[in-house]
Length: 316
Image 1 (cartoon, rainbow, N blue to C red):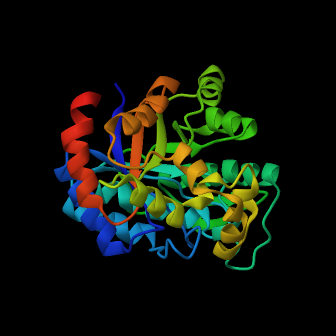
Image 2 (cartoon, rainbow, N blue to C red):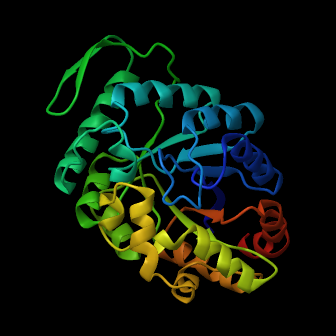
């Protein structure tokens, strides 16, 4: 059976609350967490976006959890040399329990310094070079790099873990899956896509295969559906659009055609454990080693009790 972890939503919760949720997750029996890395939330109703590296420090200081960023974009907004230092520090604080999830990013977060948002193929090339830069720096010693996208001049990361953090690559489309198989130490997805996962393995992809999903547990199914619809209608924004839109208001506009009924077909809402288990099993059946579950809304304590009582015994 796949390991079930908890998915911390940086879009919905502030930094102290995320650290508190990580502690609650550990008390509920989770051993691993994902944490999203954003500059903006997807929409203003979500309302938060703390700096993930500070939050990871708080989690490291107060829990024994394994932490994966789900995911960081190391290409535009933050230079890979800086993220190499950040990831190395996180790996030290977490005593080796840190996995660096990376992806090609979204315009939503990466445009904020005025940089041009590149085409898909260029973004994947940038991601490949960024991972190369970070791995060079994790080797220690003075490092310089003259690449197509990145320059590094006599840089050295002094605080290094004994073993570099594994780099798990997020992939949805075929080109991204091929890149993940070529350069990744593991695979990340937010869809239970067995075909993509099989393609990753067939192309030589190795390491952990992690998937992330959302639920909205609540005693009142109608209220849970309403909460999910208020906070996450962008879940159904299709295809490449989620990578191209620049502002939370754009996602709100794109989500206007999403209905509550349609969203509830994708996100299990309410108290029925079978609906929650069915969604988790989609990832397990697709071949994921670890599945990270995010509870939408503020009733985290209720979800953790539901997980302990209703889900964990059936997932062991």
